[in-house]
Every structure is written in C-alpha cells, then in structure tokens.
Length: 353
Image 1 (spheres, one colour):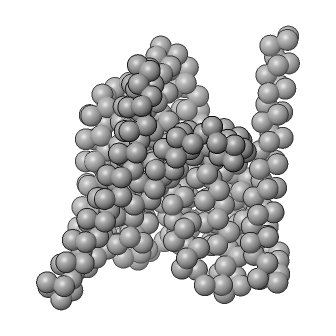
Image 2 (cartoon, one colour):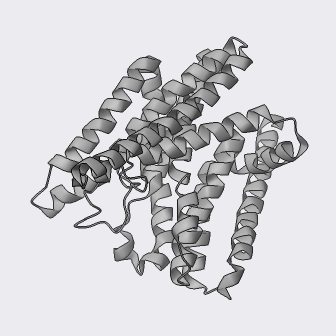
Image 3 (cartoon, rainbow, N blue to C red):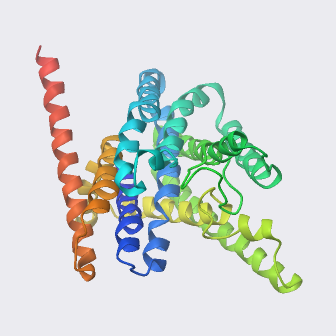
C-alpha cells in the first residue's frame, strides 16, 4: 500500500509541476494533464482503502491508530493549512489571492479526521451506502442550488463544489463532501481486503483487487458511452449530463473521472502485489514507499517546491522540463528519506531513555 500511495504522490508532483511550469512556459498541457489527473482519485481511494485495512488487521489496536489519524487530520486543517497557504503565495500573487485557494489537503484532512469515527460506528456496507449518499447529495446540491449571496456561494463551493467552474470567490477549490463520500466508499473496499488478509486468503485478495479495478474502469467507460449515446440520439447532451459524465470533471469529481482513475489505481495496486518479487518492481517499491510512509510531510514540502520555488524561479530552457521534474522529485524524496531517518533515530532515543 505504501508503494501505491508513494506512486500517487509522484502523480501529485507531476500535477503541480504541470500546473506551474507548463503554464508558465506555455507548453501544451493535454497529455501531461491527463496523466497527472490520477493524483487525487489515487490518493483518496488508496487512503480510504488503507484505513479499512488497518481497521481489520489491527483489531483492538486500531484505537491507537484512530487517534493518530485524528491528530493528522486536525494538523492538516490547522497548522498544516497555514503552511500550505504560505506556500501558495508566490503562485497566487499575494496572500490575499492565496486565500482564494481551497486545497486538496482540506478534503484529505476532513477524511482522515472523520474516517476513524465512521469505521467504528458503521459497518462496511453502511459506510459504502453513506459515502454514495453523500456523493450523490453533493451533486444534487451543486446542480440545484444557486446561492444569491457571496457567503452562501463560498459555503456551497467549499462544501459541495461549483457548477460549471463558476466561482464567486475561489480560484481553485477541492470541495469537501464529494471527496469525503468517495473516501468512505474506499474504506469499505479496504475493509473487505483487510478481511482477506486476516483470514490468509491472499489469492482472493488479489482477485478482489483486480476485479475492483476492472469494474471501476468498465463502469467509467459505460457511463461515458451513455453520454455519447445521448448526444447522438438527442443531438446534444444536457449541460448537467455533460458535466456530470465528463472524464475531465475533477472539481468537483465526476463519476467517470473518479471511476476511471480509481480503477487504474487498483490495477496498479494489483500489479505491484502480483509482481512484487521481480527485481525492478521490488526496487521501485522500496524507493517510492519512502514517499508513501511520509505522505503528510511530503505533501507539505512539495507545495513549497512547486508552488513557491518553481513559481518564482524561471528554470529554462523549457525543453529540459523532464530533467527539472525528475530532479525536483529526487530532491523531495531525499528530504523525505532524511526526515524518516530522523524520526527513526528519535524513536530509538526515546526507547533507550
């Protein structure tokens, strides 16, 4: 799981690098942006699955894990958010402009704050139904509610998301409730996988992971086909259907967009488990696991690299962008590695005392 979360973090790096460097140097965005769009669904779905797995595999010890997640969620929504806001100032063009950004970490913070509570209060199928209901309700509000005032508009878009990307306040925002709903669904999938781990049914774990990815991909293709068919029959799809079933509908996350990239994520998880004993896969996993194990720290650091440093320094020439991206990712990995080594040493000192 750490390897998949670390891979998702690499896609976060790419997404933010593209957001800053490609736009600044007027490099075509289409292909790089399509690849980088996996970042948010991958991180949310895997984070939810990890929560579910930990709940099943740690048993009575999950109580301690719960408080660790809750502390992380509170940190992301308080001090962590302040740090990320500061990192956005160069890209946004000032601290007032930075206040108009809603961050992915807002949604992640809420998810890992409420996730442990939901784990202990609801069964897996109940969380899945609750997550689906929250997600569906969010889209109903997005399409049906048109707030009259600025405050109501800000509340709507921060909680549910904007309609047609028209925002009275935010430059960019990750609406909380749609992502929370998808996260809760991920916890139910993770609990199912955790059951197989506890029971030692590793082949069933593999089949379920593969099947989850394939079903998600097939569902995204079917929904996109429905939109295409409607356009051919009616001449044009309604604006609501076009928006909801767009493969590019990220903020708020549409079902085609999320199912496609979440499906790719579970297929990647299956591949990393299935081929973990092959040397290149083993080496790759051992490297990116550093990012996965220290994802909270890495999340904050990478904002300063991409939204502060790359927003201020005009690295060129632009055709060397792959080198700049690789070097930046390597630098973040090195900092994460040193951070992890420091945490291990501090833990050993505490034990020795």
